[in-house]
Length: 324
Image 1 (cartoon, rainbow, N blue to C red):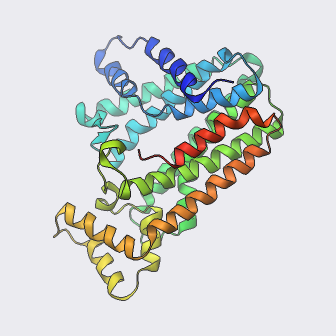
Image 2 (tube, rainbow, N blue to C red):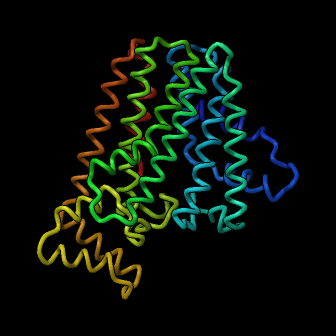
Image 3 (cartoon, helix red, strand yellow):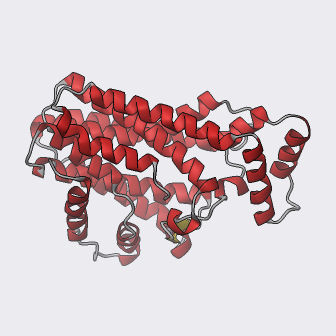
C-alpha cells in the first residue's frame, strides 16, 4: 500500500509530464497555469488509493486519475467566473489573469482532455467508468445550477443546501474513489461502499470549507476570509443563522444582508459576531463530524483487510482537521 504522500508524488510527476506548450498559446497557457498552482490533488489521490485497496500496480488507474483532476480544475475555471472569484489557491483566477472568454474556452478544452484521459481506462472497465464519470459530470452541473438558484431565494432549507453540495462537490469525490475501485476489480458491494465513503467525506469536506471561509486562516486557506459573507452566499452557516436569529439579532442580520452602506470588513466582522452568538460554529462542526463518522462506517464495510484502510482513514481525519 502506498501512502498519500507517495501517491501525490506520482500524480505530480504525471501532471508535470503533460506538455501544454501548444498553439494557440492563449488557449493552453491558462490550463498550464491553473494546473501549476497545485492544490490538494485530493481526487486523483483518492482514485489511486481506492485502486490500491484491491490491487498493487497502480499503473492502470493513473490516466483516469489524472482525468479526474483535469476535470475538477475545469469546473473551478467556470465556477470562478460565476462566483466572480478573484483568487484561487492564493493566486489570481484565470478570468482575472486573462479574461472571462479565455477562462470559458480553456475550461471547455480541459473537459475534453479530461475525457481523453478517462478513456484510457482498461477496456474491460471502460464503459462502467465512463458511465459513472458522465453521470457525475451532469450532477455537478445540476449542483452548480442549484447554487445559482439559491442566490435569488430567501427560503433555502438546510436539506436543500446539503443536496446541492452533494451534487456540486461530494459526487466527484465519490466518483473518483469508485473509479479506482472499479479498475481495481472490486466487487460491486465494495464499489458502492467506497462510493458512499466518498459521498460522506465530500459532504464533510465542503462543510469544512464553509467553516474555513469564516474561521480559517487567510494565509493558509488561499482565499480571502469572509468571501461567502460578502456575497450573501447561502451556506450551511448562513441558512442556519437565518433560521435561528430572532428579534433584534434577526433584524441586524437582515440589515447586514440587504444594505450596501457598510464597509466589507465591517460586514464580515458583524456577521461573524452574529454567527458566534448563535453558536453556528459548533452547529457546523457537529454536522461535519456526523458525515465524517458516516464515511468511516462505509469504509469499514469494504471487505479488505483493515490494515489496508489505514491510509484512507488517516487522510479522512486530516482533511477534516485541516486549516486550508
